[in-house]
Length: 555
Image 1 (cartoon, helix red, strand yellow):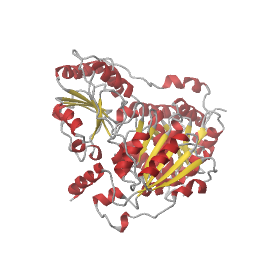
Image 2 (cartoon, rainbow, N blue to C red):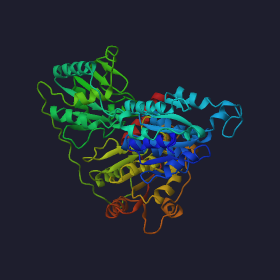
Image 3 (cartoon, rainbow, N blue to C red):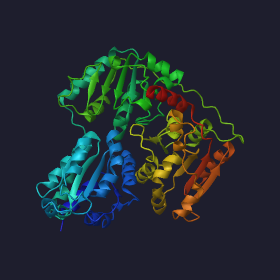
Image 4 (cartoon, rainbow, N blue to C red):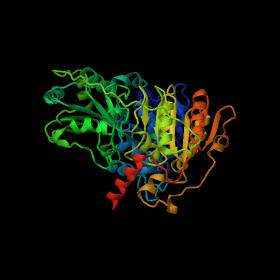
């Protein structure tokens, strides 16, 4: 018998999702049977719901869609911090919450995982208030509800939320619906007269500009539209930059890339190009505090065309362009456009000086340069908020490299499970994680899942005795910025790894660190864990400057 649960799983599979994340609970167990019985999908199974949400976020950034399954109340709320991060940064994760039987909810029974007051609506309402598109599936048109919810994710790139009662999941539906799934969703971009008019307006301003600059961001990246803008940039020889929120939205290996922009903390060479631009075409970007050095960008809306998923602003005017507006349509239409006189721009990057390693104690600035030098084309670099993100995001990636981080929501502990999700989504790209020990202690439980799935990333743990980014803002020597000291090199064994599955290194000097990186490259078949010790008050130069800016703003 083909059921609504079967249909929902088939839709998830159609959306290019082979892994489903979450934690079992009695309200979702029957639904999980429909996943584990398939040979073309895998139930990942997490240590807790928060980790599952982070992991789904990392997976969706690569695949364009992810599914997260929790149980009503306790599991649902445990995942919400991760889901909120997906909402903040436009990552399409479908949260599926197993709910009590419809009859029990209609009778307002005092069942477990509730507040014992017979009210089963407050969790959906809470997610609606947060800004998610929500559905409570019932026996009335549940297939339509699923289709509408998933289509909204396709259109917006945002997460969505649905509750699936036990009895509704078992509802028989026609098996013919499976064959109709491809026709139910519009994955492409529909061109309209309004789209053409808006693109014509954009091109008119671009042609009038003498020094245009393209700024790309996370909305473009998470809807997988970077290739379209790359075509537009290359065809017209336009200089472009990205923000660290959305870094690698367009391949940073292109000769038109001038570097990752960060307001007043940008390099002088890059800053001069941005400052001289008479028009900034911003596509899918948001000028948030951490990626503009506390709003120190040199341009404002008077010389900006901002094209975002849900808004358009042309030189400060935003109310004339939203009729029948579709972000994907505008981006794909732009890809075909040519300037009346294409620019002739290629950026000559400053040469990277070869690193001279010594037995000096490992420092943060050396660490960042050495790690980036050791990367290769096609790899994925994952950076936790704080020292890792601040030190690595300004550096230019090698061609076809990807970069995963969460600088807007900036929830510590995110990067480790997100890296696992991203690695599962893209197994051909070796992942390199840089995280601090303070962040890792929140989510290290997923090391067991990583080992169980025999994944082979490189995990580098900056061990500097606490929350360095917080020390720089306030409380350099305060006890609340300290964390317990752990021996991370013992962790793989403790979480079930066999001796032939991993290599672990404990490093204190420049030479020890570069040697460990080389060994990691020599063993792509193994999990590599590097515990890198640094001084508690050492930080990337960019983070020290950012800390001063934040401290001044907070005071």
